[in-house]
Length: 413
Image 1 (cartoon, rainbow, N blue to C red):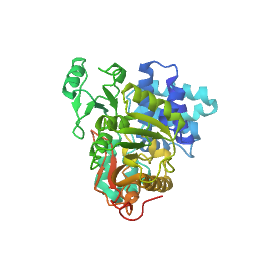
Image 2: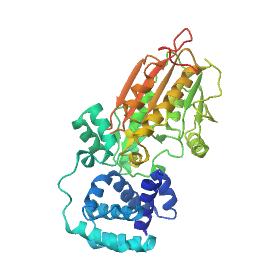
Image 3: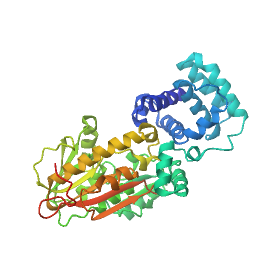
Image 4: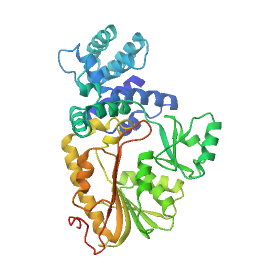
């Protein structure tokens, strides 16, 4: 049953370009927590190691398999190579899943997986296959950061990330409580609120969950919120593209006297945003549904602004390995255009002398420096590459000039 669901999820991601978390929710209904964890490991493992797995089984196929057979071969190969299951268990269970989904493909999948089980993994992989990255991402990162750095980034992206929280109560005391539960806890270095826990922890069982003692947010994203440094505390602060609300909550704690408007375009994400902010007791926050490229605010009417723009998610591939299949180089160029439009609209709203912070969980230069170039002179700018203890992230603080014109001369709407 679990292999059948895994195959169906992989098809949804690779063929329908559906986010893995959405596909998981659709296919994992009714499973126990233990079953969901096993299914998660299998699906996300396949997505993290797709390129080496594909190379592995492709040695024994004459033609490209159809979508379901390909997904089944990936699921079977991952079990054989990475989960250290007995060959007969991985083979028989995967073939039974194919019989239930597409009986005509069962014999082909069985034959190929048997050949995989009989042979060692391929000795040679191309650099992008060894890095488990699409060729276009590998080439972009190699050109920007160097071949050695790409392999280091790739190693990070192939391992599950820690669960990272922003803790709003006394951090040391809270970690002590968690350790008494037998859970490892470490303070993050990028934020005074960050705590790192083992991957897979059930956050609802942690101390203070119902009381809003913490929220789930990577410490690179926390660092961006902490880096936002307006010259004076804002009275009206907009948080654009706010869902699911982690950065909104940090802003609410940093600027408790501000009126914060959390703006989100997607109606499907509004309920979760409201639920999270309610649990976190963010009483100085109101929620608005609006498009961040055309906001219903007057020119020069806002004291501060935080923009966490939609992006290709290239900095969080270890957390969301499906992202490398959901976007192309053409998508990055299109996203960069949206990001520039959002920055221009944000700068239009700022009062003279007010500052905004632009942030994305991508490390592509097209979505980083190239977006803010010419729009305002960054007061600060930082790119964090993915590392063992944090995601990849980019942020830049921009200020509207005191005469009401945008520094750099290209802002406004």
